[in-house]
Amino acid sequence: MKAKGTVHKYGDNVDTDVIIPARYLNSSDAKELASHCMVDIDKDFVSRVKSGDIMVANKNFGCGSSREHAPLAIKTAGISCVIAETFARIFYRNAINIGLPIIECPEAARAITAGDTVEIDFDSGTITDVTTGQSFQGQAFPEFMQNIMKADGLMNYINEKSIRKNS
Image (cartoon, rainbow, N blue to C red; front, side, top):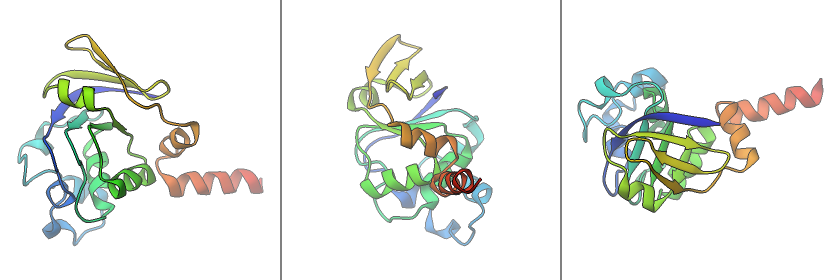
């Protein structure tokens, strides 16, 4: 699995209330949530983001409440991967559960800037800033996590596995 896109860059402690503000949580529709993604920190994000783009942040990305809406809004907005120095653990798990690839790599998170083009090889964990030519080593996704992402989330993965088992 690979991803390649333009970077949208954020700082430390981007919490779930900023990713998808509580006032928009009256909908469970992923497209509706995505239309408000990052609005309180970057009002132009939704109009700029393109399918396949990459989000990069510093420390403690996804802190705050445990709402699964946050990674869902990011993914549905078009982000193919989030790279950060560190993630809040519940956000990390929620991202995997809904099939949003995320990679912790402090060196990449600090060096990559907004607007850069970045490519990620999930098999090896290699992150390449195509704009600067720098490469960074993030942690590769284990095969089972890649399978969850390929299935577009944990529930789909479990359902697919169950169907194969019962066939």
